[in-house]
Every structure is written in C-alpha cells, then in structure tokens.
Amino acid sequence: MAVGLFSLLVLSLATPAWAQDAQNGQDSGAFVVLSGPADVPRGAQVGDLVVFHGSSTVDGTVNGSLTAFDAPVTISGRVTGDVVVFRGRVELASGANVSGDVISQNDPIVASGATIGGTTSRVQTHVNWAGFGWASALAWWLAVSFSTLLVGLALLWLTGRAATRIEDTGRTRIGPSIGWGLLAFFGLPVIAILALVTIVGIPLGLGLLAALALIYALGYTATAWIIGRRILGTRTAWVLAFLLGWGILRVLALIPAVGGLIWFVAVVFGLGALTVTIWRARSTSPTGTAAA
Image (cartoon, rainbow, N blue to C red):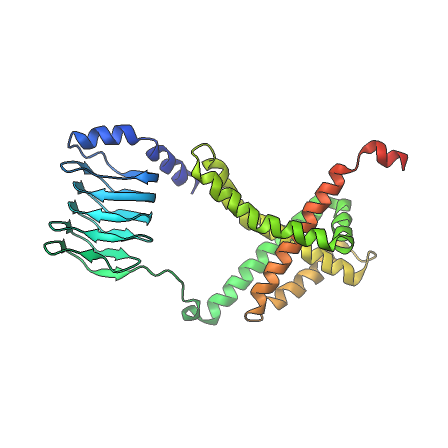
C-alpha cells in the first residue's frame, strides 16, 4: 500500500510533463490528480486517468479507464475503458464515445449522439452486511477481538507499573477523560483531512489516517484495563484484570445496535484516560516530586 501511495504522489507531481505530452498529441500514460482539474484537451491522448478531488473534462482521448472519487466529469471525446465516478455529475456531450461501462452515483446525463459501449449502473455506496450472514459478522467479531487482545497486552506490558496511572486516571478524572477523548476521537480525523489539502501535509495526513485504527484500539483496550482493575482490585494480576475487562466489552459487542455504542464509549473514554495520564506524567516535575 505504501508503494501505491508513493506512486500516486509521484504521478501527481508530473503535471507539467503530462500537459506537454498532451498538447503534442502523445499518449502520456496513466495520470493521477489529487486535487484540481484533470482536463484532456481536444487532440490530446492520455492513459488511465484518476481524479481524487477536482473536475475532469475530456475533449480528447483517454486510452483506458477514467476514475473520479469526488469530481464532476464531462466527456465530449473518447474513453476506451470504463468511466467510474463515485461522487459527482457525469455528463456525456454529443459525439462522446465510451467503449466500456459508465458507473456513477447518479444516472449520467447522456446527450443525443453520445454512445456507450457497455452498460450504465449506479455506484453501491453502502455495504449490505446482512447479505453476508452470521458467518461474516462472527469473523469480524473474532478479528476485532484478536487484534484488541494483542494491542491491550502489548500496551500494558510496555507501560509496566505505569499502567496503574491509567486506572487511577479513569477512576479520578472521569470528566476530563471524556472531554479529551471526544476531542481526540473527532479531532484526529479532521487534522488528517486538513493535512491532505496541502502538498506538504500529505504524508502527515496519510500516516495519521493509517494510524487511526491502532489509536482507537489503544483507547478501547485502556477502557478494558480500567474496567477489569476496578472489578478485581489491585491485588489481582494485571493480565487477569485486563482479560476480564476485555471479555466484558467483547461480550457486549455481540449485542446488536448496542455493540457499536459500547465501542464508541470505550474508545472515547480510553483515549481520554491515556491523554490525561500522559499530560499528568509530563506536568509532574522531578523537583516537585522529590520535595513532596
């Protein structure tokens, strides 16, 4: 995946060379646009065309497929492959020729004289999980359970005795934990999306988006640790305390509708407890501790 993202960045920075080849009528190969217009002028030829955010007007020829994630697409030239638009208007002017299928969020606007060699269909914007049956739901539950178990054990093993501070924060700093947890839960994705807007911040945005699953898992397992320690007390081994809290949360996850809410609450509270614990540890100076 990292190689693919790097390739997209390299291709997106090659706009001047692509534009020059397009004006000369040469096929410049595949082209990717992260943000901005991706226009193919009349007489120009390109390979596969991918637009993440912006717009695309094809008056020339796309020797391949045209894929747009968030961009309106207008075609008066020719596309030899499929046209797939996840979000945005698709308009085929008179004389447009699409050899493959046209797949879009809404029905395309097809003028008289435009031809489509394949079929037109709608983008499936939601997954029908019910169609997978109970086996897929169980497989997902097992995957989440196994991953959170490993993350939780690693977290407590690495923190060692400092794990008691997490439990203490969850017991004595409930309000701040909830507040900071909500800020982290909703703030981190917003920061990642804002970073993607600028070229300089793209690596940060992609890295943060990729790390969100692990960050949320840390919050979830922190809450499991707090629950288990509160029930069994401090005299019980930390492994048993964590397994008890983790088991309670995973059993609650099996309840329809309630399971998602429990996950959200556990992630928010755990992220807040971790944030407050780190802040308290950094704000406690060695001099103040020795004096006390």
